[in-house]
Amino acid sequence: MKTVLRNARILTTDGFRDDLAVVIEGGRITALVSDAAPQLGGASEQVDLGGGWLLPGFIDAQVNGGGGVLFNNTPDVESLRTLAAAHRRFGTTALLPTLISDDVQVMRKAIDAIRQAIAEGVPGVIGIHLEGPYIAPARKGTHDANKFRVPDADEIAMAASLDTGVTLLTLAPERVPLDSIRALVERGVIVAAGHTAATYEEARAGLDAGIRGFTHLYNAMSPLTGREPGAVGAALEDRGSWVGIIADGVHVHPASLRVALATKPQGKVMLVTDAMPPVGADNPSYELYGEVITAVDGVVRNAAGSLAGSALDMATAVRNAVQLLGLSLEEAARMASRYPAQFLNVDDRLGEIAEGYQADLVLLDDTLQVRATWIAGQREDA
Image (cartoon, rainbow, N blue to C red; front, side, top):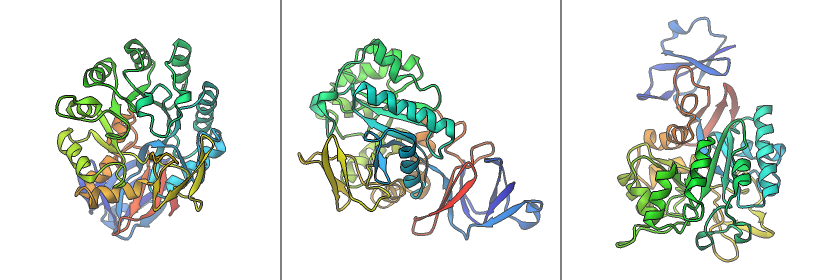
């Protein structure tokens, strides 16, 4: 069935347009046409969007949990359905469920669950993010250092074993041999630096070996100082890599995020949530590594005081990018769609409202609240 979405301010590849309509058929965008009614004849369904903002669906590369589910605790397909559905309410139409540092058996089970979810067409699941366990004890955050290790050939093969979808792996470049980083990249894994105590030189060597980005910039990594640029300095200096930022006003001061935006080339800063189970759930508490953690006033910390992920959703991250960082809605939306799609190498089909792209969309009202989403053309109201 052909569907036409009209009467909206549509974020196209060239910016916002209020004179176009989006034609959807077979789960894809088949055309952008004039919104003049006479040219819309023959459509099976015409949907008036009431002048709202129609954006590409948000893409989140770091989602630990949602809807009361923590992926580490229940790495199965039903948990993935719950997690993805919870984030869809906030405009996320594609995501990487994220497994933080864990044992090999749990990693295998998580990869198998992602493979099955993609095979079953679970809406929104496009791959997996393995955040650790090949990271640095000195920058562990809330990760369990007892799980940390250096990958051998078998673990590299396991980490790269998802034969469909995207695999993103966060590691500390000073902890993993450069040949192992190269081996992961050669197998199609997108490698990011994070939870790292790397010197500038170590981070730079990792970039040269194929590291493509940095996980939650500033958090859990060696800082930029006058005489030691650290991982942050390497991330900000490098022109080709992407950085993820958690724009909740807690993980990083807004001024530091504005520095990153001023330093990195446009298109290399993307929004992530690092979300935990309270997102989209009534219960603010969850269990991580046997410890009960509770979100208080939207902030998630463990008993030691370390930030334990976030209670952030992507729609709020977009609003914060506008309100806290002073960005236009167009740029904030691209940081949640086009730029992560480019980082994850899915920008040939996701992250744009353009002919031939999957019809993954989010409709916002004038207060930038989500009113509806579409995944592969299937609508769900918020």
